[in-house]
Amino acid sequence: MALNVARKASGHSARLLEGAGPLIQPRAWRPAGTIDQLTGLSIGATNDRLGTTLPNVDLTESFSEEDLEVLQQASDDAGGILVFPNQRPTMTIHDHVRFANAIARANATQIEPHAVAAAHPDAAEVLEIVREPSAHVVFGENWHSDNSFMERTASFSILRGTVVPRLGVNDTLFSSTEDAYDALSSTMQRLLLELNAFHSANKAYGPGHPGNSRAAMEDTSTMAWREDAPILKHDMLQPMVTVHPRTGRRGLFVSPTFTTHIHGMPAHESKSLLKLVYDHIARPEFCTRVSWLPNQVTMWDNRSLSHKGIADDMSEKRVVQRISIRGSSPVNYKGQSFSLTHKVAATTAGLFD
Image 1 (cartoon, rainbow, N blue to C red):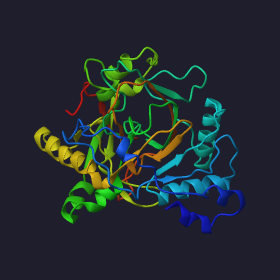
Image 2: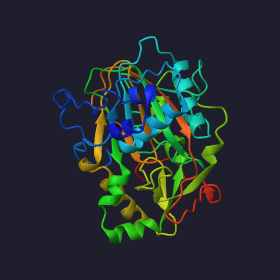
Image 3: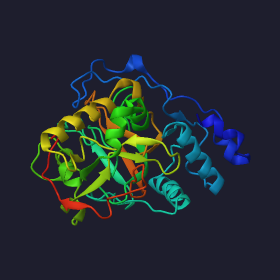
Image 4: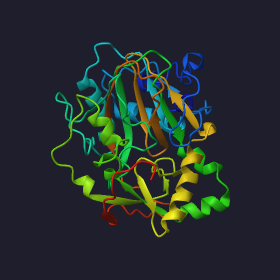
């Protein structure tokens, strides 16, 4: 956990880790029996080792290089989830952007504006996700890793709740795709290590499907489309098992939201194997839930995790603002990457197909 980092940190950096603890889990306040659209089973999350709460991090402050490395190491130690509660009520969208830019600079990269959705009018780097109480389809409700359809996928995503429902509803569900890989048989691991799959923005954001992310965006009065979205024209090839560039851990890298098919497999084999992997990732022993409080920010590492929003109570409005950091082209255990060189014409819009 993040406390292991404290031995190496000094001064202000060490204070960032004071009070570190597990994620809050208000189980008694959560609606019972919420069904995962993917599995058809009740949502479960029993991986209480996953994630760390850091109550002493003030995102309106400036951060040194050591500070940023301490936070990233804390993320590595916690499986990729850091929750920053108790942010100042005066925190602004520009504070959010400044912190994200600091993380990006620490990794010699940049913020990745959303490839399809129009930017926030006050900050082009920010995607604002609005869920109205009347919504029929929920943006981000199905398992995915942010920007897995891009040449350089997202490393960190940083989500700020600006309007959050009561505690215990509309949580974010995370699965450790690294723990999920580790739990597979050695035979299945060897099979998946050699496979690659295509990821498609158009599957989620293309027109014509009533349940995909585009339909969710069109169900709001505030989310709009970019005038130009070239990412919708091509699908990218990615390894099914990727290697984390900081930790070296292997993780499963497919999702029902963006993955279309396994390269080189007949459709019926691809569909069956992907369904097996999707269901495996969603098993409760790999999952945890992040519950939302006012003035909370959560940062997660898409290279270690898959996630989804839980739409267990639609009676209250929810508004969150997300910034994603550009990562690198995902690599397999041989150090190979394919997203920069292997593309095909985009698939049609879909969901679970």
